[in-house]
Length: 401
Image 1 (tube, rainbow, N blue to C red):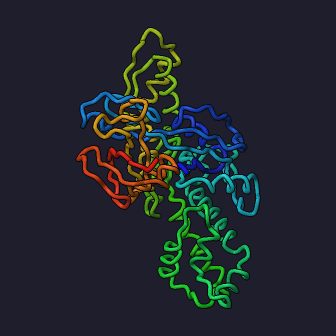
Image 2: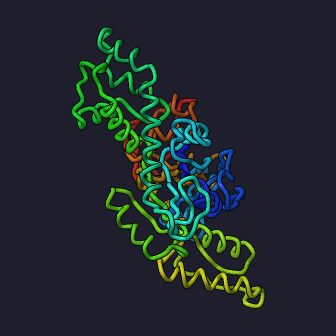
Image 3: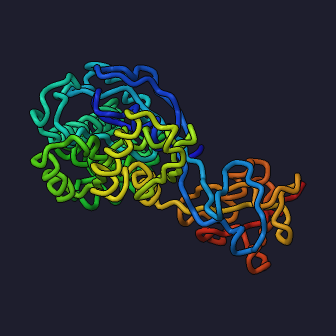
């Protein structure tokens, strides 16, 4: 299963704008709650140095792209339905949101820094709503959702542990399958929280809630995209540090600015790379007065003030949260080609700690099943199945046909 980042938040905070800016997709955008009902799927790109520079070759990417020695590695994104308070009870589109959320490995929570949408996403006056409330409520919704999963059939789980001799860690890991939770994660959580494993039937709701919070941090690491920074009052922007003190990564963003720059670039009006601190106008005469004013506004109120629109930074930090590395499989470790003679064709995001055999399975199940050995294309040394991969490795896999 490929890594997937969930774009989450209450309605009308700029989720779909962020999604479109990050993926260059075309999700519907409107200024009212629940514009997004069906989840939108797209591809974001993580920028990494391409090995073509190290090997002094011209690459011919297949599953990614290379621009001037920078490889744009794909990562799946999902823009889910807006969440409102008590979604875990089924309010709004809560059940659908949480079902879609199950697929995501990490979350980017879009928070309206301008405070111009109430708790259910209805428009209100600028600065009238405290964005800190959104941080608290989304965390609460996810944790209570996880608690609900754990509590379902809890009596049966407790009985099997106390009477049948089953390990509570294993039972909970099986219950939370699909969320990336492993038995050792449950063990660490129980030990950290000092919960009695001998009598699960005595666990209190508060203990299960704390356990759910621990599980959220492991299975769904989350950063905050503090959006609409160009219109946010100073009092609202001051809350950014308050959110960071809660332990979150917080990135100021302007999804509208990024989307506008992307559109201008696609029309050949500007030269702009995602994450850059400025852009260059290519066709001064081709700009309408409205377009020229909009670009000047973006430069003054976003790029010069914050150094970026924040969208690419969110993608980069999400990959850091997941602790992913990029690895390049090839079929010929001398020519760095696949069977179609494409040079450095594929780039895969893998969890740090992944092995050569893990990469074989990532390429194809049959290759993993018939793995014999691998070769490091940088050193041309043979490596075994348990060899831990490093960032930027170029690996040839040899399998029994």
